[in-house]
Length: 479
Length: 97
Image: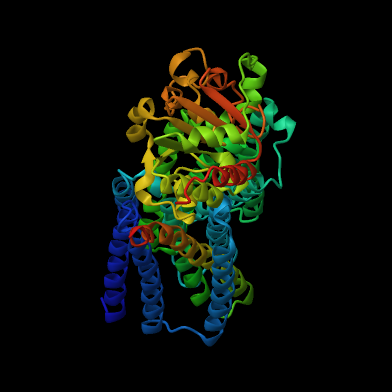
């Protein structure tokens, strides 16, 4: 071993260690920010390691430098701008977009190597080695393409640019996807047999497969899909690692792939869905409106913002249940103003965070943190559930399925078994909602029918603004 | 590097990933996903390798450069956005006083 090889080896080892520590640190609130920087540092270190290795061995041509610099500047610039500009509410689609580009990168590398075999690596390969090479190229292209098109479709659906076409809810989609899958398998074997031109078939059908699989999935399940695609992009990176013979890539890709799978599992659990039903079950709302007839509401009490303010003023303990509707209305800051007023009046306020509140696990925490809600006031479901009987007022803001008592009481309900917040135990429940439409699941919410529940209809932000006005009139929080 | 040892690397890397995020508070799921996503942009190393080994092959240089751009978009954007999210958490204690 000569010096550059040893140096690269040591740097790679260090980078892997730091990346692992980074992922580990990201799982604790205190260390998360430093861990993220540590991981970023590890990534830069790995680049330095690679470049210094080539400088020390074969050298890097001026021409290569130029193309490296062009690619880096453009990519980093766009990435940084998007990361700074994007609003916190559209975090899921942003992650999807970044993720898709990672997949695209793996795809392009494999494509490049396949079309223009890298010198001194292909000529003197034995049969076994070249077989491995072909297989890893194919896997990298296949997974990379699915990651890319899947992520882009996920992003477009979350942004509302793309709706779920009707035909994708019928059985036809399984047939179509099977055709794509079989076609990519054929292209795969054809490629391994040495027919290089079938690489384009592989690119096209795996791209189509990515679209075909993601398109039927409803908005509610999208976070799970993004998490899964995130895992795929790790696998694509690992496959690219086989293509260019880089251990560091394989380790890092495998780590991300495995971590993504765990996260996907956690999300599924929180929503009481299995991964299989997310991937092949189609949109949940389309299913349940057809099958389990939604039932009529019989005992809806609607009330004005004024009544709501009066009840809040008299309360000792208030629990806020934020949900997707709050995120959509971007009302987290207005909510914070309301709770500030209540706190100034000596009322205890906590936020009950369901594991899948918002559009992604943890998304609601991010949004509330953005609005300066103290971290200590955010309570997880298991912690807050015993507190509901001793609570005077619960404000449900744009949450629906996660507060449906059916999940506990009605074993015939599709929601049965899903962990929910026991808001009905509180003395009074106010549900702020735009109308009587159902949640993601399309299932009637028994909570709305209960005698201690009152509905306040309206956009979350507008209702909260009115609430601030009413509280002001009552002199709340103005000592 | 023999194929078999690369497979070992793959296996151990996967096990490491499974082990690393056993217990994560739900609060951190989105930042963790975003951070892990940034790390998956490690394919930038593959793109760099491609460019360095292209030896003046212009189409290959372009493919490598575009690939590098996509990867860095993922990496830089991913880390920045994660930092933005996490900055909101870490600001809390000082604000409480």
